Amino acid sequence: MGSRRRGRACVRIALALALGAPGSARGEMSPEVAQALERMRQELEALRATVAAQQETIGRLEAERARRADAPAAPSPSPAEALDRALAESEPPPPAPAAPPAARGPSLAARPLGGTGAALRLIDLSFIDLFAVGSSTADDEEIETLQGGAHDPRRRGFTLQQGELSLAGAVDPYFVGEAHAVYTDELVELEEAFFTTTALPWGLQVKGGHFLTEFGRLNPLHAHAWSWIDQPIVNTRLLGGDGARNPGMRLGWLLPTPWFSEAYLGAQTARGETMVSFLGDAGEPATVGGRPATDRRVRALEDLLWLARWEHAFDVTDTLSTKAGVSGLFGPNPTGADAETRVYGADVVWKWRPRTNFRGWPFVVWETEAMKRDFEAAPVVDAAGILVRDGTTLRDWGLYTQVLWGFRHPWAAGVRYEHATGSGASVGGRDADPLRDDRTRVAPLLVWQPTEFSRLRLQYNFDDADHLARDAHSVWFGFEVLHGSHAAHRY
Image (tube, rainbow, N blue to C red):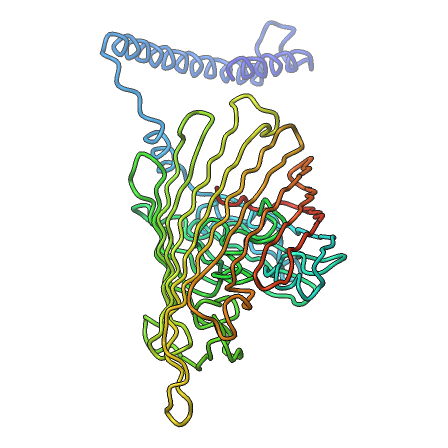
């Protein structure tokens, strides 16, 4: 700054002399030159004072640095403390101006979170197609009794198992949300739409909306997350072909343990076509075992479906991990005013993957899940008050166990074994009831999965079912494609 001022003063003197100011030739100084010299002197004095002040400041800083060098070093703040201090000292930027009316509307772009100035992408959007084609020694009517899952291949030839449109993402700093709409050959429905909290204390989490009941391992998963093409027999019988799901609320608690441990307590509506072991569809005249259904309504909390689940996960070694859980469902059934159903389950999964792998290959996944249902069937009385059928408890149980070996990228092979049985007579006999007879299935599987966006599966089913006159042999080929970004599924 001082050098620029001296330069300007010298220029003014030179101009004055160059213009031939009066008296310059006689050795006399003109008034203009005198004023310029005076201004230059004043600027030099100001520059001298500024330099002196800066030298004094530098001296103080040097003395302070020397003093601190002799003093003991203070402990450095932890990363969390530094982050807290930075956030406390920062000033949030002013909110962005509102968009003009013509520019407003739904958008997938980031938007600021309330009052923080931070931005977050709100939606992951995806569409998943599942197709199957195949044939069986059973005819189409028999296939429908063998393949009871709503997303199973249920006829010879081609089947659209489902087309699923999914939206998932953050709502704000306190909630995330998901919505999944499904199209099949028979219907279009909203399979799930729920929110989950993200900021509750003490390891708590609340989930609310319309969602799949978090019973066992397979029921909370969508069909495209299954390893096999079709749903296990025991899931179809006890939880329904479309899986147990309904509106409700669920509280989760992440326990303060050295390993992952979480407990769930939930309540959902017990009526609907997805609640086959409980109040079921009000339009159906019969329920489990062909027992007649009454129009039972919700009167108190015990008329809701209640879930209890406790699960754990931990690493056994650096290449082997496991997760195990126990579940219980408790709720009313429509055979009488006080009739109840109880469903119990236990599940475990083991996963092995070497530390050195290529895109997750090789791997081995072994899963087992067992379930049992106690269905209290109330006595059947006719209009005249005469006892037609005694009350009893219909018991059904079963399991599946499956192992999948990813032996070389992108190939995997596996086999699943299933068995389901029960006790207590169905109307017409349990052996003739396709949802309660003795069943055994063995299903080898071959998978080709080049990326996370596509998968081809070839599956053979051997079915031994008491309600059929002969064993059934079926072959199914499934093709799956994913468009977009889909939220990750549970372990």
